[in-house]
Length: 182
Image (cartoon, rainbow, N blue to C red; front, side):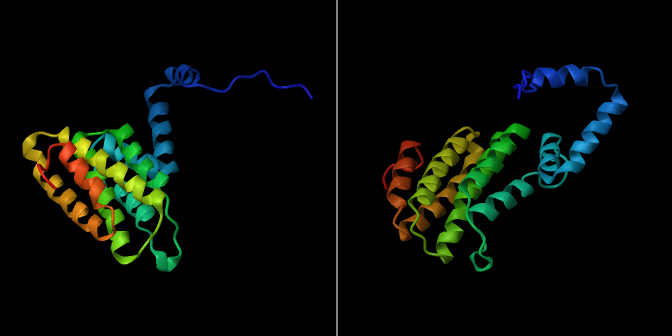
């Protein structure tokens, strides 16, 4: 059997096809993409700031995957939770939205750890990395926008001491200039 010499389609190939569409055809395509998936809807809502809370679908995804309902035997997926943040970045990536989602991720992790003991080094390492991402996101904000986020991260840090992971977060708070002494 002969191998196909056809190359994989690329953005350039698609762009050529899109250039030939008139406005009604392009609107129809976008409508079809919108109807095709919830993630497409969330992307478009965020991109065009449509709705009361464009972060809600991203938060729901984060919470589902880092703080699952263990009684319903739901599994954990750090990768799927992080993908929600990445998807938001691609949609619009506003600094305050990134700060909110990264801090929310940390809070959701601590919610799980508060009601369900766990000994998963990968989960804790992911939480620590996201805590640092949250600090980076907060530093990118104007000083008058930082206080609420820092207060929430302080709570996460305090809770993390109860599960034996606060030292790393203490060091990160000092490194990013939010605590002189831990």
